[in-house]
Length: 249
Image: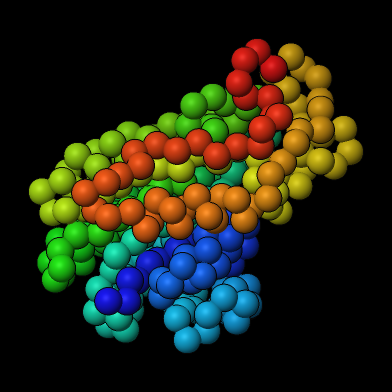
């Protein structure tokens, strides 16, 4: 039976890598993201016959619901949701962060994942065979902050709570949920880590930080997605080996 996955933020970065890995492993993938052109490029590179381009702004709950309705209408079921889309805020002192920017990050990184999870539950608990899997993009920031990252770090810590609640509440319906925490994947979002003097460290200095290929994350997501529903990776950390995270770097 053809397995169906939704990937949000699928046009670039980790979402693109995960979507391509899933298609390579035989999934039909619904590619969700704000811009149509990058999604179409991913579909063309992956498996056009096994992909559906679905432009979606996840900060709008109505568009999220339309995404799941379109998926159900097209494929009749949903096996995997990768809640990947996210954004950060400008690296400014906590007291200077604009409240509207805070709310935008919360809407995109946290509320959107909650709404998508609700919609996935509705499909997964009612379909035959019943159940499915939800994978949340947590980030290293679900464990430890960077300087001037209150909005992003707060939402990623919250994603950990959502992951645990989803894993618990999904048991009754054969819905598994796990979280992948990613450190320094080479994507446009992390280009600043290797530009100029690099990024600010907790000791006040700046440094260039090592990165890893986004394709390595894609393979990890596909591994989690491909497990039978009686097995689950609750948390996985995939990181650049030499990035300053472990220890007192």
